[in-house]
Image 1 (cartoon, one colour):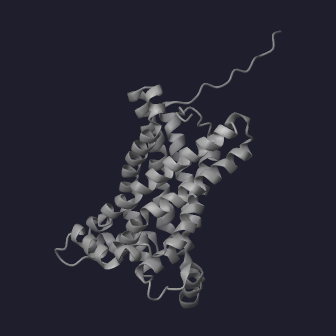
Image 2 (cartoon, rainbow, N blue to C red; image 1 turned 60 degrees about the vertical axis):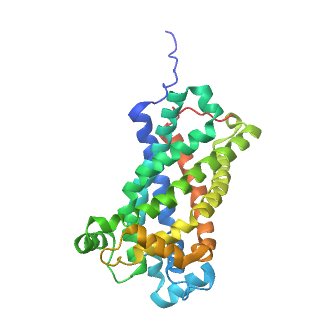
Image 3 (cartoon, rainbow, N blue to C red; image 1 turned 60 degrees about the horizontal axis):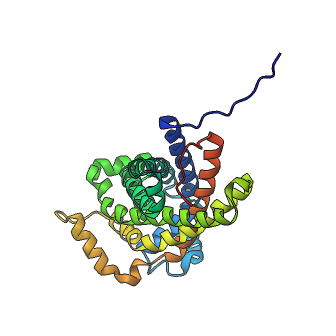
Length: 308
């Protein structure tokens, strides 16, 4: 009797492939952002009250614990996890989807030649849709962090904002979040792709073990995170400010943003940059490492690479 020959499974495509990309993105973003909730709490306090929290990140940690107890460092953990689960699905799944659409539209050779533009356009489009999902939960998180007595958690805080201020309150920061997240994500993906491309040119990916590929993703993600944090810091500070309190009656979001920008100045807009560099560098490194590992576990290997 002839021996049975195992044939390799066909690469995934369509919904099967992109749903796996989305799940891997949801897991990597929710886990990393959730784990760094204490850092985000301190960073947000430094941005909102620099006169009180004026001793850097370590001093900020100590002050929060002394004044409010260690549990305060987990304020907003619920909306952080939920918000970034949704955002991660749209961001990573959308990035892979839009990248494939550009490859289909331009053709492989042209897309590969102009791959930096493909990375930038794909990440910007993906982030736009991701922010529609993230914005209400991010607004809730900032309100909980800036006003610890506002509500007991995600559900009560979300409900209170909806009842008292309406749906518009959740999107008061949509402009700043786009201004922050789109350049952030564009820098994050294009720098990651370029650094990873340089690494795999020297150490071919096909010759690397799974653990070494994870290390390569960590290193590339760390550099990408630093770049993304610097690019997006001013908008991150403005987002924290605009979500801290209600606007005056009849005051538009645009006028509030202009007012906040004038008050902050360039130096003020980079308040909390040390904490954010640490936070974004760490979480971006973790995201790309987890994303690569989860994709491999899920068998999401049907995407087309245009790097050289």
